Structures are given as structure tokens and as C-alpha cells.
Image (cartoon, rainbow, N blue to C red):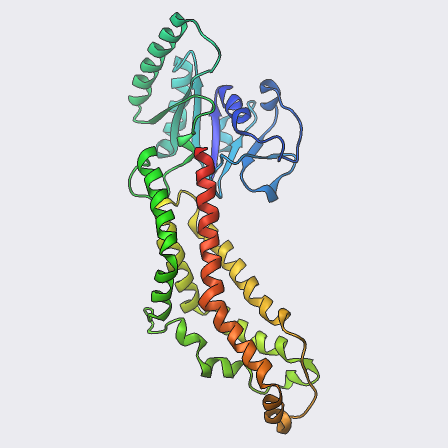
Length: 352
């Protein structure tokens, strides 16, 4: 998901309040005025760091904060699927601000806009604070007439407006959301037993994951194949196994998706499908390691000798089959748990 950070220069103050210069590969120390000269992004994905992408642990998973150049018209850079965060600082809700917001709303983006009233942290006289408070109340009234969601933001506080509603039916309230995070933590304590229960339970097609690792299935991977001749048997066996489990085997994918979504859905403010596909890629890669971790064993015979070869190497072949069973019974469970923990810690970092 991409959040377009628009409005006045307070968006650049916001940028500087959450960016981690130490972990951003681009070490250029932007001043607020310079930041608006070109487009830049904030992300929590360290792998994407470059001259335009900066790192911040405060950015939600699978979300980019896009800061377009201040010299472009916001309507020229908005793409389908974008959300718009409109920053406004004192003096708030000027006629020009309202006019520009109406242009955005008239373009059909009403449900994709939130207002952030940026409260500067500079030291103020008591009369200044009183004036600001009155201006804030007036701004909230004016923006509310446009039926827009409004946030007040003070630097060094939690930016709730980044947690754009996604796959959550009700609006996110900080207290209840934090409670949901705690429920996920509790769920992790009983995750093993839940996983075991569903592992043995048949899915919609009548197939359980347990049944996909039974003796007959595993024996099929080790049947004679011409590719075995003078080749490492584990590579040949595992090629069959990979095709069986990961090529259009919806029982395995649906199981993984159900387990993961059931555990994380209540706090999923990111793109779940993208997140799950990444998890699934990790799962498949880990499964492929099974063959690579086996001690090489080459078959150098003909078909009629194969049964004798199986008997001679029975211990190693049984070990291979048990590794597959262990992967689905234990490793897969731990991979899903690790992903849940990873996402939970990232959300907790937003609150820190």
C-alpha cells in the first residue's frame, strides 16, 4: 500500500521525526526545504534502501510513505490504490487548504483521504498555545464539514494515521488495537496445540496435511526413475516431492494460509496477500534445503538392481522421509510462528 504524504511543509517535519538516518543507506541530511525538491519514500524494508528510499521502523509492513516533490500537483501523482495523508500546520485549514482538498475530493478520492493536524513542538508562550488550540478546534470543524477523518499529531508520539484500515471491519482505536496485539501474543502461547489439531484435521477437500506425509506418499518419491542413474538420489527424490507439495497443491497452501491468517487477521493493517506470498516463498525455500542437507548418495545401477539398493541404503532413505514428516509437523509450524512474531514486533516498534 502507498500513502501519499501531501499538504504543507509539516509533512517534511514528520519525515524527519521518524526517519532512521543511521540505517538509511542515503546519508544525505535533508533540511526541510531541500526535502521537497524531489520525491522520496519511507519504508520499513531495509532491502529497498537506495537514493530515494529511506528507512523508518515506524512505517507499517508492506507500506510505502511517498513524499512527492512539492512542485508537482498532487492529482498528477496519485495512482489507483493510493491513500492520501494531508498534513496541515498552523495556521490551520486556510481557505486555500480547503479549496485544494475539495479538488482532491471532487476527483473521487473522498474515502482515501485523512487529515493530519501537525502540532509543532517548538516552545510556546501560554497565549500561543491557547491560540493554537482554538485554531485546531476551528480546523477540525471545517474539515469535519467535508466528512474527513482527522488526526492531531505531535512529533515523538505514535502516528496512528499510518495504520490505515485494512481487513479490519471497525475503525482502529489505539487502545483496542493494542489489546488485539496482546491477544495475538496469547495466541502464540497456544499456537502449537492449535497447529497440531488442524494438522490432523481434513480440509474442505477431505485431505489433511498429515495424510500428505503418510508412508505411501513418501514411498512414491523414492520409486525408480531413469534420472536416478549416476545422479545424487536426493535431488531426484526431492524434485518429485517439491512438485507434489508445491506445484498447484492447494491443500498445503490453503492450510498455511488459514493457519497464518487466523492468527494475524485481527491486527493485519498491511497487504495480507503480499505478506503471505512472501511467507510461502520462505516455506518452499526451507523445504528445498532438505535435499541439500542430505549426504550425497549416487545410484549407479539398472532398474533390476534398484530394490537391492533401497535395502542397502534403507537407513538413509528412512531418514529422508522422516525429514519431510518433521518439516510439516515442526518446521512449517515454526516458520509461521516466526512470521507472526516478526510482524508483531514491527507493530510493537510503532508504539515504542
